[in-house]
Length: 191
Image (cartoon, rainbow, N blue to C red; front, top):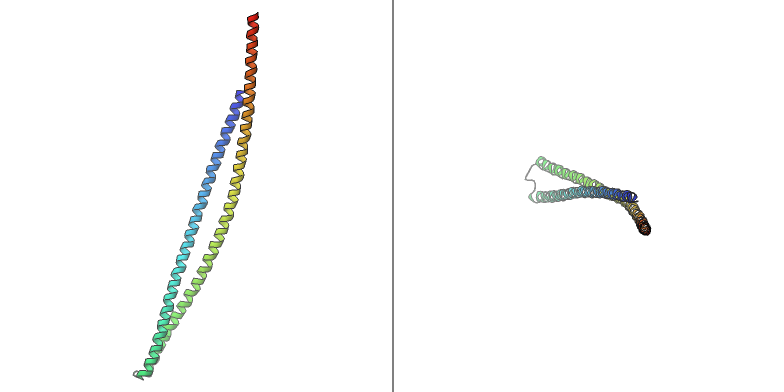
């Protein structure tokens, strides 16, 4: 009887150790998921910084383009006021240079705008997909953890019930042995 109680106690200890081991393993998995979440948020922050940098560059290009347009208008106005202080070829060359600058900055502006749009789309897609995937994975892991926890709690309750039953049986047998010893002692005294 005592041996079976020892077996049940050792089974209970094994289950407790297994539960502790699983609990530790699941905690590690949760920590790993939180770390991955942190890295994903860092990636999103990096993309956000890149987008902001592209926007600043875009604004600078727009300002430069606007400055060139203003300069071009001033030059045209001053040409009208001053007259032809330069030769026609000089004026044509200067106009061509200004047009080339304006085209260059317009092209740069279009490139930056395209890159900015692509980065914003990529950033939004990454954020949405990563968040949804992690949420689903975490939900799945939580469900598994809850099921494992319930299973372990049920096993512990069963083992406690068995232990109580065997403890009651042990007390019953001990009482019977005590009663038998008393009766035998009485019988020996009478003999």
